[in-house]
Length: 245
Image 1: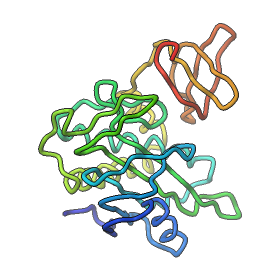
Image 2: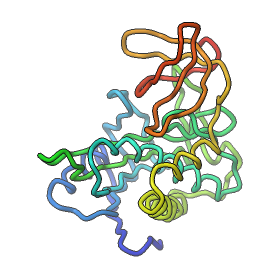
Image 3: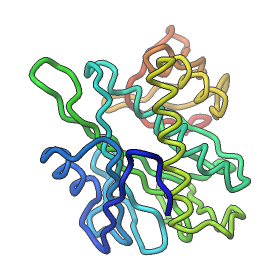
Image 4: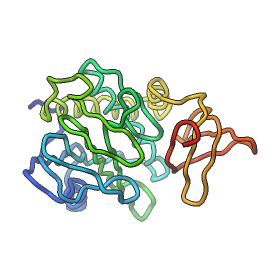
């Protein structure tokens, strides 16, 4: 397997969570570009602590990133990682779409889980970010809220865990370099180029309420701008469903 210059792979057989393993390595000083992968996870989790199915045959990995930016910009990396995953998926001849903020979909079905966790220094800059990425290669789970798919089910029969990881690392390296050189505007434009639901009526479930309106765009910070009957709302966290969900 060939990784970009400066990147290295820490391959494991079985772990509880690659994010937990990467967090420990990052706290101990592991460099930017370290990727922890595992054939199987026993305690995988998604956003808001949700369990994530992790049978052998799919890609489970976490990349350690040291972006050297204020914590206020950490959320931008969610979109950088999502765009990079979409690039890797597209390299297999598929047409991935992005559902806010970081769901990678094929024909409306969820293909990938992404979970970013960060450590902050006393001066409120990012010490490290671990970007957990799970791509359904051979299998996909039955989910309560979403339909899911895998690369094989979508037609990319030649995809393997190894080839997906190799292409993902290359895409991450490219998109991070673009983000550093051109700022979030370049990432935002790439994300919007694959966005699903722009201009459509959506439902957004927040922790304390549910909003229904038109998905207008994402602003320069990555927040979803929703136009409802009562005005525009800037949403930084929530679950998006199409129609009235």
